[in-house]
Length: 360
Image 1 (cartoon, helix red, strand yellow):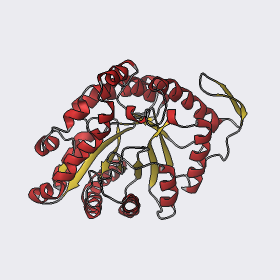
Image 2: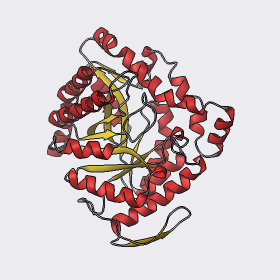
Image 3: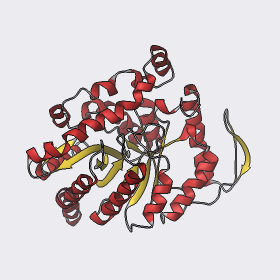
Image 4: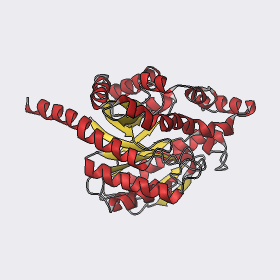
């Protein structure tokens, strides 16, 4: 199992955007020194409390100059809002600047992004599908043509070409069954939403695992959870409770832009029913105890978190646990504390297991 870090760059009101970005940069440097495998950053615009991560490729190019080993992954590029011919070249240049340490998540995007982007919601799925086709062509063909509903190009050659051949590894994620089916068929890795308990995630993940098996691919599930660790439970609660509750509230905050009954009907009709279901709003009503008990967050002593990761590993197909160390406006030092304790106490337990298995 790999161990990564996932970050939305949630930014509370009043927090300097510049200060926030540079705190994340220092946390990436620490993650590299601590031995984490990959750092994933969302691609998201318009809603500060949810995310100010407007250009993850730029962040990765900068971080690569300050780190040595850690890989970088966008989670996820919102393909319907991008020009895929141009995005392919941008990904390739970032792969060069990170010395081949780049991975790419490819997604349809949150429903609330389309209004501010002036793109009709019903175009999200067909634009996403065409963008996937074009990216695969751009990375595997010296020159290609494409005739779609939204993109029509002839004899296009995308430059530069990436270091990794034929392209950086692809991931996707979301809440619709078709996403899990497609990921399994293509052999992509898949992100699961960081807020939902296992019993909600298990059915779509079974779709993914089945599709992988039928297509001859190995499942690669990236399981995301906010984490906070200390030796004393009372210290943990005192230091993390407010930020943990904010994490759920900040994730749900953009849904207020989709509250009219007309908008909810549109969401259901156009493949974004999750955003009209009330699920995000319901999460904001959970207490600290419920979040911890339902393992929406892995919160506890190192021994407790190790048991939780062991139970997760036993479910099969989990390629990576991506911890969220920065969430809900938590102070920078607490993010560093979590990364440090997780790297010193949790990761070695599983790397020893891998070494023991290899020796046998």
